[in-house]
Image (cartoon, rainbow over all chains, first blue to last red; front, side, top):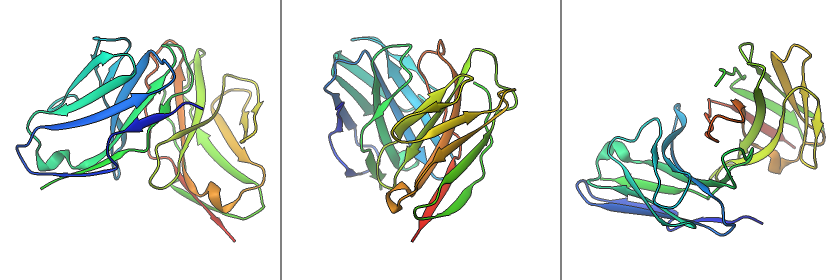
Length: 113
Length: 111
């Protein structure tokens, strides 16, 4: 079974802190994604990556950056956390660009106070 | 990606079939219909997808109308563990593998 793991299920940070959310997949997938999920807004794509050291902006990249130094790991970085970044963050991976299935991690619920 | 319309919520009795509709009247010829679900406190999970033929797997069946403007996801014998939000997504396979999730249908399976 494909496994996508996220470093924390719950995280509380203060405004202005730098926040790292880590995601690891164990199936040698090429593609990795970061989404955030908010009530009434569904899932929105923040960033994605098709290969190591490659990244593409999604629909809402502002205030975020990403890093993919190894194929299995995709990190989401909040350079200076703000209260409007309080959300559920979901990582996903897929085998290739034409894969029909994305595998999601359990999510990290981030609260910025 | 074509826009989809789903009812916000539905109820189903345990053991009965759950039929979840989705309208996608602007679907293009190269766009597939995907279904995912999200159980509370978990990430979304892929269920099934199809282009124009009906599809069945161990989780569900997907019925796509002949004009492809709507589809129905069928859970043949719903259990309490099927309580979740179900998302219908329309996407071309060359769309870079990105998914656009709408509001979905919140299915409540009741004993």
